[in-house]
Length: 113
Image (cartoon, rainbow, N blue to C red; front, side, top):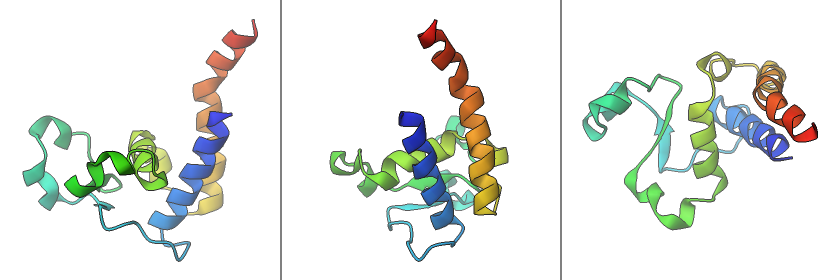
């Protein structure tokens, strides 16, 4: 069941990032740029790409921890780059479904047997 919510959250987040909806990212979240390097340690820089969403300090307070934008930006950043670069929303959803199925299928089958 949580996989369904993850897909819905990612689909909406994708539409927001690619401008397919009038909803915008909150000011505490923005796309990663190389100018963000000064605020992050060297180890974490190597995992960021141009489709990576970063959170400013004021967004990291507890009240935002379970908000849609905060939790979904974490799932987005952990999604494979091959999904995050897809611009078309339908194509993104189709490929994300395949990815989630391949990711969660072993644990679903294991839970049944």
